[in-house]
Every structure is written in C-alpha cells, then in structure tokens.
Length: 519
Image (cartoon, rainbow, N blue to C red; front, side, top):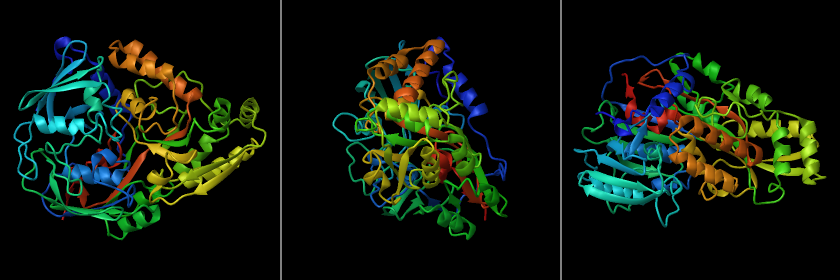
C-alpha cells in the first residue's frame, strides 16, 4: 500500500513538512507508563468507559457531535482517509489519489477486495453515495467541508473523479473528516449501520452502552484484534476513573488533569498524553446583544486569567490560547499576534467603549464541554469580578448538553478537537455559513481569505493568509479560547498497543481496532 504524492511528479513537499513538524512538536507519548511494542494477540474483549455520550446520540455519522458515537461508528464503519500518528493523510477506503495540475480535479482509487458486513463488495457507487450524504439538502456537520465539490463522477467500478470549484491542496485531509464514514449505496437504516470495519453491532442504547463483535477477518492489516468491544458511557470524571481502577473497564478518556499524576503512579495503569489541537472555548453568539459588540467581546477576553486556569484546572497539561483555534504546533501558527492576557483595566476600557455600564453575564457550563469546564467558569467569575463584571456560572447537565445548550445559549462552554489543517478547522467552525459556526461570527474578509488559501500553493503566502485569518478571529471573533488541552487517557496494563495521536483522543477514536488484550 503506497500513498502517492498528491501532486504527482511535481514533488510538492508541504505534506512532508507538515507531518515532520507535527511529529516533533505536536505529539508526545507521556512517559508515565508507555505501552510496550509487543506482538499483537487475537482474542479477548475490550471494555471502554467514555465521556462524550448522550441519550440523543445516533449512529448516523451525519449527526455526530461527540466522541462516543464517533468511536462506535469507527468500530462499524471505515472512513475515506485516515490521519495517522504523524498527522499525515493516509489511505483507508480511498486507497490512493492523484491531483491534476491546479488541484481542481482529483482522481481517487477505491480499495479493492473489501466487503461490507452484509456481504456486498465495496465499489465506487458506495463511496459516491457516502460522500453525497453530506452534500446538498442535508443537515450534516460535514456539509461545509465538502461544499467546494461541484461534481463526483464514477470513472469505473473502483475509481472516481472529484471536481472542485477551485484548487484545494488539502482535499485528502478534508476527506478524513470523521463524519465521512462509508456505507453501502442506498443504505439508510442507521439503527443498524452496515460497514466495512472490523466489528458488527450487537446492541446500542444511546447514552448508555454499545456492544460490537468481531466479524471474520479484517481487511485492514494489523487491526481488529479483540473479539468484542463494549463501550460504556460514563460522563462523570470521578466515576470513569473509579471504573478503571476497579477493573470494570479497560480504557477511559478525558482524565482529570488534577489527578493524572497520581493515577499514573497506580500499579497496573498506563497513561497516554497527546498534545495537539484540542482547545477549550467559551463561545459568544455574535448575533445577540450584548455579544454582538466587538468591544464587549474583547472585554471578556481580557477579563479571564488564562494562566491561572491552566495552572489550576490543567495542572500544566496544556498551553495558553489566544482566541483562535490554530495550535502552536501547527506550521501555520501565527506567533506574531499579541497575546491576549489578563488585564482588568483593558477589560474596563472595552466595557466603556461598548457602552455597558452594568456588566452582568451568564456563562453556561458542563463537564460535557470539557473536563474542568465548571472550575474554569468559577475562576473566570473571580477574575472578571476585578474588572467589575458580574459573571453568573450556570451549571448544566452533561447529558443533552450539545443538543440543549451548545449553539443555543448566548454564552457557553465548548471544545474543539484538533484538525489536521487550518482549512478544515476554519471551514467547520468559522466560515460564515458553516453549520457548526458556534459563535455565528461572519466575516467577508475571512471567508475570502479562506477560499483563496485553499488554492495557494506558495507556502510563504499561504502561511501569511492563515496568519491573517488567525488575527481576524482573535481580534474580532466570538470564541474566547483560553487554552489548548492535552488529551489524557488511561488503560489497564493488559491493554497493549495504546499510543498518542494528534487527532482526538483514543488514537483518533479508532482505538477499538488498534489495541489488543494481554491475558
């Protein structure tokens, strides 16, 4: 299996640069108890205790808003392209690809010899159908990611041509979006997804648990070791940790940073840390007063003591944010932007400019948003008070948070997992018409730059363009991003093959097919 150069014979090496930088700076295996490079063994069952599930969850990939359904989805279905541990786009069901000059037309070869769990052989029609689920009249969160696709043609049973409005060097990266899972042509029974991954569904209780079992041999080399996987939704951090320590589950995600050092010292426990693009957000709806006022937004950005939050809530397992979503580990990070720091006097100045004389706000929080969201709100409340701001921290239930609070409350906690490219991150959450534009921020200048950067192959120019987009979001956007948060997860010693990953926790949510059990 060879990944072709995305630009044919031109030798364009931006991917190599990106991957190399990410490997050095973005991901580190927390050496508390690193996993050994053992030989994989088949058999056994895996129990996963996860935060990130709700009773409203569905297995329809178009609806995924958090990690439990995504993780279960990847147990059942494969994606088009996978991001590997080096932040590199690698083949999954799209086995190889080649861009025509200008990167407007792309030819993708569909992997041969793969069958769905119902026995159907994978072909180009299945790929086209699965992509089109997220195009046109759809509520899919991936619609914005694919909006530049103007046509998809079947060239033969195992090859398709994708044509774009304009050139985009990142198309394979965009096709790695976790919503883009592959089902058979015409499939619609989302209660029982049919896929090509290593497992089939036995049962699914939304917000409670799911059970999958292995089906025959898996086409994906070196994956699909365990016989079955049980995924339990445990949104409470303490309960999740206790479940691991008592042996009720083998793996847990979203560790409490304040206790991770103690947990790592426990016999029989291994901890994995991934430092990448996951970031906490306090999102303001920029279409609603008073958050529609730029000076008011700046006042709140200067009213939070970011370092205090990092020291108290993250215990060092994260770095300061500057109100835009591109991490320091990205080669496109704009290090020249002035850092927003805690400054009550500046906050008061911007409140005055905003014409707000009696600043009272309500911030909705829940641990579903990110572990430590409630404590972050409480610290923000205390630091904002020194700027004369009265901040009411409203604690919401974790179950249903993404349906009932996020993108509904004018000011609420949220988080974003990292994305492999700035284009994907900005397209999903900051472009004016993006479905998940959770601040409802609109900027013609930003949108224009985003589209132009997609077709720009000069790296220096491209970095300047992404840098300017970061400035626009930081200065004017509605996202207060105080920190980037390391992914912290743990497993019992019997789980082998765990490792860090730049995309989301649990090895990009594909951990079920990657680890094995040592008896």
